[in-house]
Length: 192
Ligand code: ITT
Image (cartoon, rainbow, N blue to C red; front, side):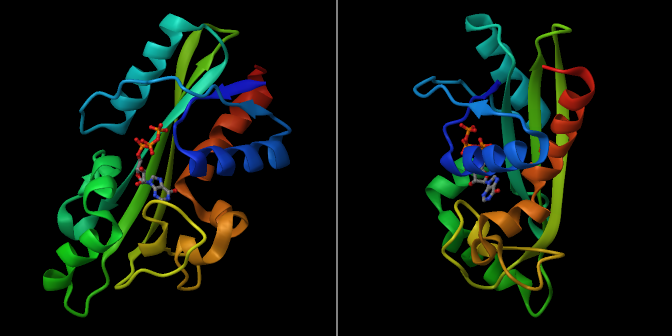
């Protein structure tokens, strides 16, 4: 068993389903831990900083994940600031920003997730990265997801947003799963 420390229910559910089904790995969550997040334009730095903070309190097999949505025409915005931007302007705010500049063109974007895992056996941090490429929809579509799911259409998703496809299908294409596969394979090879 390993801990996934996150305040985000959507992330936790997706990871739990995937790791149990594919790697027979159980994850648990400790609620109520306030993890400070540094301001940085690198997801890797943010994730590792949070992990190191947790390790000072509890040396246990555990991981954190930092993720963001990078929109090409906005030079990668909101990227590492995604949680803040989602809270302040939300999906409609992103669509409003894009409206005057998108014309009839596709708006390319990708989600990226970085997992920072503490390998208890070998007493070291290991990072795993995952990416999902896609497009930003011109309107909000679907009610099955969370965060930016209703405006993100993964390349392989037949035109559906993550929020239209639901967790099982989102888990076929998502950045989080891309990173979790690497974590799962690492655990398979080296144990917990
Ligand atoms: P933690 O406690 O794990 O940090 P958080 O929600 O603050 O939870 P992040 O700092 O990694 O997570 O912020 C990532 C933001 O990017 C998140 O709040 C969403 O707005 C967006 N995001 C990341 N992955 C997403 C996904 O799979 N679907 C939809 N939105 C996503």
